[in-house]
Length: 452
Image (spheres, rainbow, N blue to C red):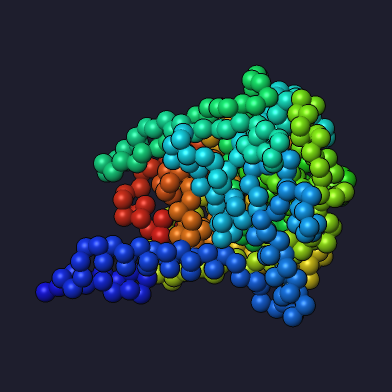
């Protein structure tokens, strides 16, 4: 009797095809599965009228746009650099999913970057930029402008053993800077960050600040106590509640986009009019600009409209017995104390389609002490070195299927088990309960998380 494997709708039967043919078919099936997952993260919300769908498409085009060096005949898309990391938003957020960390020091960072600062507070309480290299390492420069250098990741591994004997390899990154173009990075504080998934950003932006403050005022079990970060919103010109970024260090969607365009692509805007050049980087200062500013308000707003109206992927197999059991474990372990299943958007949200909606992002958008194991040693506004924003969990399984990306701020965790085992601080009690589960129970919890 011949054995068969069903993968992505493709039936492979042993004895009827060579191993090479089967390998090729499996590879094609995996590619197709990833394409389906990526498409699930790029759907517009239902209810957009034709004009809004066109605006959505325009924003998507700009999000995927590969920007070029100025001067260019196409002045709408020039101004890249002079220093930058990647030439397009989608370079770090492929398929709107999470970025991936390099597996070895010889592999370049393609979907992540390294934040830099020195001790002390900068403007409005932000991290104080390094005087020579600024607030992040820009590895690439346009012709005539040296890139700042390269960050190499070395992985330090350890093994965790569950009570039932199953083992999990954990890894933690160690940074090494190479080919530094502007001198040594003395006294620098660093934090490697993978590109986050672009899921439900408009809905998270629409949660009222008063709701964040109310959640922060409610002490939870196991010593859980969330906090609101207070950050400067350059787009609005005032201090506001942080809700985006791994440390809730960005207050609003429009400002988050403008800051990323400036820091990652070197594109100026009304909110961020200065090129990312420090006084020591003379070639950067002398490079031609692509306009003043290089990114128009209309372009920024189009990208914001696109990201705000991406539909979070629907739950998968929510009524499966294993998923239901996993959901019960999720609550019994105490995970929901931070990963709140439901929030509600404000009635006066900026976009009508996002108003007064119950959403299921599995986050409280608050800062929590996550322990020394995840500490980056780098404060950010009111966030301390051990503090991280509760990561939203919606779309978790589909992001992973589409990108084979890592979890946590630096992509260290290659599986759900690794990600959970790194939890400490306020999450230590929940993590310890997870570690005490039997293998089948852990599998049910993972199935639940994968269904989100």
